[in-house]
Image (cartoon, rainbow, N blue to C red; front, side, top):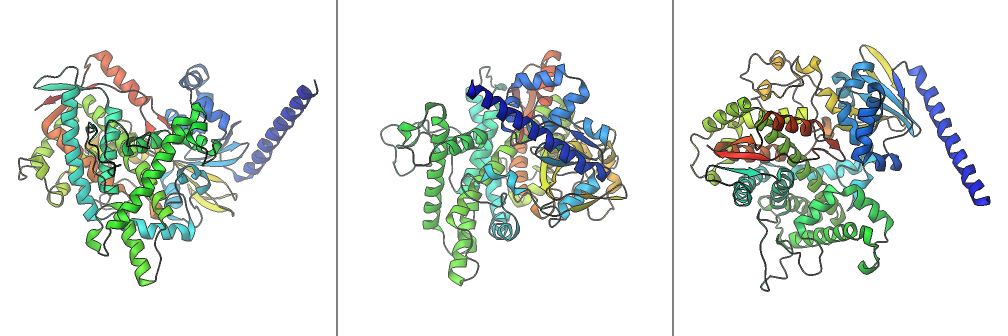
Length: 589
């Protein structure tokens, strides 16, 4: 009875404190004169994160609650924010506040305000406190701010260069050719002229991971795992095979794939279990997650050790990203200047490159090929341009030249930009005001946001605005980006200066107003690997479209409706993604 009474008393205290905080923050925002909504939970509440992880809960919220309430609740959680689309912004405007028991969030979907936030790092620093889970293997360029960020950026940005892009190009072509061969071998309905692809999610992740492994880490991995017997080289632990090397539960590639796709649960397990606890004593319900974490930790350590043994003091030696960071470290040691990144920091950045460098591009690739299957007219336009661009290239696709061909492949780039517009991998870019108030200018009025206000730039809402994209903003129309399309809504911006945002540096494309397009973020903290991603996507798509036409495996009306349902049913954990595979058919041209 005493325990029960104590429990009720503690619960009552918690509820009272919960309500008091909501009232306090509501009073704080009232004088700001911006629209606001009150939500009884925050984006970081563990219980709500667990509840929203169930598809049935998300279904019940979206289908059983009134539309305005469902949108308010879905917009408040990252995992379901995608499903709210731009409806909250249509009701409340391009800037509104969300009051939660843990603080105030400013939601931004106005391009001019978004640009203010991106371009003013002093007033709106990155909210690094929200990125703790990405420091699983060490601090990195994404998770730090201030001088520490400058230090990381100095030694990571230079690794993303044209030499590395050429390596990305070569490996992307190589891996895509192998993927096509694998698809043809494994297809349940294989003929000489066509085959069915059922695992676009898994194979898309493998494609981009293998490209990253070679161009990022210096580890070549075949698309099809190697079969090993007793003759396996025990020193070659990075080789991809059907079984992990001795002492490991995962191969190198499967460890990266597992940790990056299940990072939230891996982090929770890592926090629960002492690091030195023997494997036999790890509880069974988290054993796989701890094994994946420990295996990847060992692989990253050994990768740095192996790479350090082979790095020469020469700019020409830095072909992959790890070699580039180690070269910078070695140069600092020799000239006595900036000491470069520590081994732990290099590991942290390797991990963040793995997260940002393969899952996001794989997601975009998967959305793109499904969209092309649904839009044969766009695919015809794409194919014609690829044929024209490759007219003077060798007939052997593996011999395509990066410097000569990549600038000509305008339409694959347009497809990527449009796919990123409609399905941005990161639907929200978090900033905050820091420890002092910050000012935004919205529709000619200045508004002062309180200290410690989280600021969400809602990318998916910006990308759907008819104000910035025209009346067809919700339609898949890659031609809008083509500089030769004088009818594009974006053509009106052609003579406007200052529109070269992150990922839009090419002279062959139209550009929207600044702040309206941010799949790579923008400003000084924009994605370092944006061209890495663009090169691998363009190369892979060109290789496929040059040889095959992409169709739905089930091209009936019901099949199309199912594909459209899957497209619009994505969820966002770290990145946006489809929850189901849609089988495709590739037909040889």
